[in-house]
Image 1: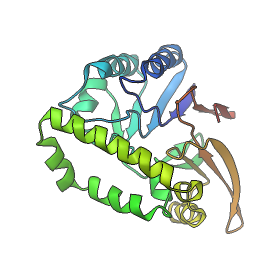
Image 2: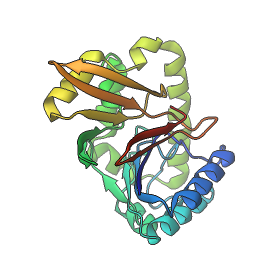
Image 3: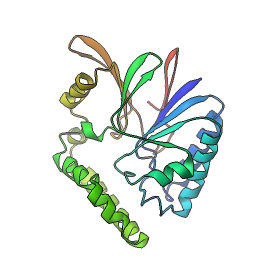
Length: 238
């Protein structure tokens, strides 16, 4: 059996092909999966558990079918879908995974993150993240009418795109010292994360110990999947 990791699918009504890819992925891997981890930004935007848009219903149903088959699915909040909550768990059978998370991955202590907390050079983003992740801010948004939330999400997307154009590639990538600090704090041998859309495997040495940082890719034009079993790692799109 295999443990699967994905991130940054950014599912939305504007990306129906990606929704179909994800549905096909779940269908094909159901017989082989031991567990599936989705490390943030499953959705381009999640407006609240009370506001499941019609285009997202097939995704919710596909996840429920997958978990009903007996495969656990753990979903970590990303910077686009941090309003996922308890009702999402009930609708899909998934379990929301607090960040950071440490798992024993076939004998290897492994740290799971979305990845945005490692991008400490982007000071403006980190300040915004602290605001929108606060319980007070989220509660305020969920009190607004759904139409207003849709408009807020549209504005946030436009601002994010502008932010990306204005910032340098280096600022939006992880900070090396933040990566080292994460390994030291959590005393793990492996780190898996997404967010940066820079899929690769980094072999590092920290305090004399070999460690591995695996960056998951996004699903903008292809699937990006990390498969891990007792024999080791296998990746697609990394």
